[in-house]
Amino acid sequence: MSSPLLLCTMSESWQHSESFAVTNAHMLDAEVLCDVTILAGEDKQEVKCHRFILASRSPVLYTMFCGSLPETGVVEIPDVEASVFRQVVRFLYNGEIQVMPETVMALMYVAKKYDIKLLTDLCKSFLEKEIAVDNVCTIIDQAVKFDEKDLIQQCLTFVSERSDQVFKSDKIMSISPEALRLVLQQEKEAQSLQPEEVYGTCKKWAKNYLTKAGKENMTGEDLRQHLGGMILLVDFARMSYDDYTDMVVQDDILSKDEKIQFLTEIRHRRCKRTVFINRFNKVQKTNWNHGGRQDGISFKTSKNVILTSVALYRPFGPGSLTGTMEILENQKIVLFQNVTVSYKDKEQHEDISLIERISIREGVIYSVRQRLKGGYSYSGTSNKKTVTVNHVQVEFMNLKAGKSDNGTSLEQGQIHGLTFEA
Image (tube, rainbow, N blue to C red):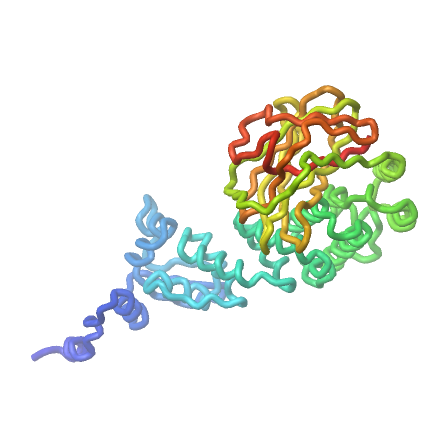
């Protein structure tokens, strides 16, 4: 006589499904032949599953169950809630999961922890599509935590395009120090906001963190201790003299030497004459593609000047170009910074302020190099080899430091112009 268990198994015939994923899910749900129990979350809820499946989908779990000291029987995973872990386990069994705003960060954490690449990619794709003013600070925090460079750059591009809204949002008050540093550096390069507003946001952010830590009667020194060197990413030298003395000098966030330094820079900027050197007579809308290869030019000047910004061509359709820009003195890199150049209606180029002002010595060869990725951009043609403005002569030449392998040359291409203080 056949046993009841055998009759039940045969009559249900779930094994006849064409999909391996469906039978896997049934084995999981019915706890058929499960050989490992996961105690998930702080409350240690049981999740029974099969080592074979887990090990076949995750290198980390493979090592856990098949390494030199394999886990057997019961495994505790206290840092992952049971509801989240069950979703991940089911994904390992059948490749299906519903990523939601309220669970994506937790899923990303598990995916990265156990090296589940397909799930990591799904979470990243979801986050990239869902970036908004009210969540970009949370997303960039997670991107920094998991070192997702592409997602970090996408968040920074979003912040650059909506900086006024992001800096006024409540969410920026809870952003991590590491992510705030990136946002401040991006803003200093883009100069989308007045430095007074950026300074005010930094103060509020530090006060918020210290308040949560139970600190009362905060001094400027307390705020500086929490802000550290990040506060120096505020472009104080762009402030007016009156705003700087009214807002910054009265605080004790900057040291005495720093206050004097920025006050000197403000006065210096007021006295210096700004000179813009355009190296092309004509700008055109061409299919100049950016795939990460290098565009560059070299130049020398007839006087000692200060290089303050470089004009790069914008894309001629909606979107952004992102990548890096370098300034070299002879063959030595003296500045490296990340850049984002965004589309703007009726504008062909964007003035990218340098995160550090570069002293240009008379007669020495300097180079500007860029590596950008994105769509098509404007480009220049009908070049000016030598340009003289306000008694400053600039001689342009083909790139002398490395290879300009994306097509830019003395005659045509990228890098629209340079801004000096003379």
